[in-house]
Length: 407
Image 1 (spheres, rainbow, N blue to C red):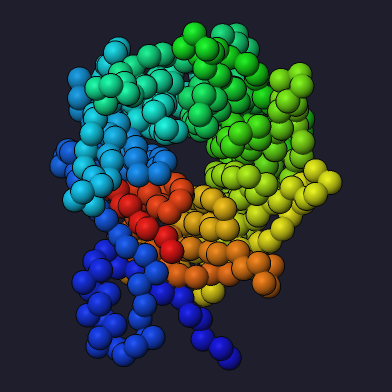
Image 2: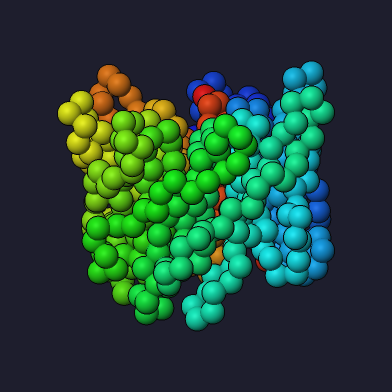
């Protein structure tokens, strides 16, 4: 039986070089460089890394439990790669103008060019809370980041907690309202906001799934890329498969319409991402003995969405959590999972699997594993070109975030 050619990546390039020298040429090869971002706050349980977003050489990291103006008020940090020193340095600390205790600002973040969106999110099951998404813009002259808008929904229906997730592409944002998993009373929704020429952000569309709550509680996760969006609907405690909905914008009318729904997505909390003609969805409850898998859907030449592939780790583990979080960009995909069986009470380590699409074989293949040896690693992920950003949020320790150059 052929052995896997996976490469386990450590946090130090020096360690890789030493291992390569010790083990011989070809036995260990570094497919990536890993940089740990500076930790602005070293308080245990600050949840720095609970959310991440990367765009080019700029990174955004949420710290939703940092005590800025009160307990769990939260913050978000912007980092940039210095072109001279080639070090990632902190450029800004973002906090909302109405900072308050228990705000959990930084629970979700999104970054695109000179725009950033950070949510203040608290789930609710009986009483509505004042969740919101805050827009920050960078001044091109001074380089300073300032708050320019606070986005909320004007919808009066009972739908769920607003600002659960956020995705940003240029002057357009997708913000989900996560439904109520306890009884299905709140069905969930997703909102499209756009920045007008006058600089104001306005709501353009409200999205819901055609399948209703029987196919999942809408708004679990969402992602946006140009005129396409994907939103997941999880069934949570019902332990039935959920759904993934894909929406497309009509360029003539400007309306958003559901283009496809894929059911039988097996996960308690379905993670999704989109880039171009591809969508990825995590299924950590799928696969043999719930080892986990991730589905990739692709839009064909006729405009129909179809399943392109199912990603599984080279070495699956029973209840391995593979598919807990996912990201996709071009011909690369990231999938969070564990490298041990979850039934063990020792040696549990969460890692990020890297997959590459090979045009010659028209197949997705696992190329290597990113591993820093921490169970909280992979709390959040984002993938750009050429960098990935991986968060590590923990209640017991200060959070961390790593920038990884993917080759």
